[in-house]
Amino acid sequence: MADNESKQSWAVEPARHSGPVAGRARQGMFGVRGSGDTSGFGGLRLPAYVPSAAERPYGGWFDEVADALFDALGAQGLPADTVQQVTVDRGEITFYVRREHLLEVCRTLRDDPALRFELCSSVSGVDYGPEVPQRLHSVCHLTSMTYRRRIRVEVAVDVEDPHVPSVVEVYPTADFQEREAWDMFGIVYDGHPALTRILMPDDWDGHPQRKDYPLGGIPVEYKGAEIPPPDQRRSYS
Image 1 (cartoon, rainbow, N blue to C red):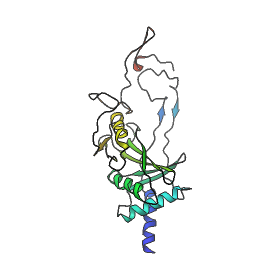
Image 2 (image 1 turned 180 degrees about the horizontal axis):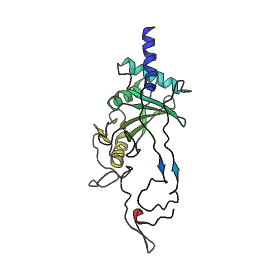
Image 3 (image 1 turned 60 degrees about the vertical axis):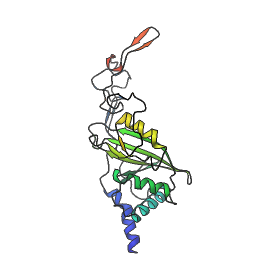
Image 4 (image 1 turned 90 degrees about the horizontal axis):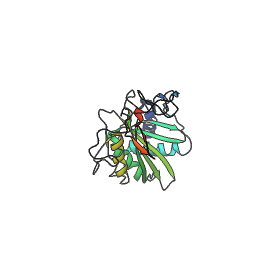
């Protein structure tokens, strides 16, 4: 009984920790500042939306996955705050994981008979902007071919220390996707076999999809007319 109570305590523990921030207020369609906004959405104002930590029961098979994952991590002796937060939002379940335990969590999700998330279908980056703590997020989208289930595993880091362990040794399909997240967001995947740019030239300065990256651009010629870069266009709003 004591062992069961210990496992149950580990399982509900993640919801007690203050989780990462995953949202920010938006102004305009693209958050453009100090230059023309030609989208027509310059007056758009949206409040910050931060999905709160979910509480059990999560619903459906989410509880089965959470129970199996927490039991397996607890059996490995990993600390209770390995999973910082569990969020259920828009029909998806997300496990926010501390980066130092990401590989253990991924191996468990892949190998545990009750989980079997064999495929990493995508690794994506997110930047929530300079005003958000731990603004850079690395998101692994995992698929269980055995049970036909999909989950998200997310890691949040500061822009001053944007290091996340590479999951390529667990999920080889993450190779090019981690390179793209590095290229666009500057997330450094430690242990990646060849972390080089994949979209931008090798000597490119900065990471174009960060929220504080200058809009910039180059003039484009189109049927005899020249369209100026976005930051030099007139504002229509």
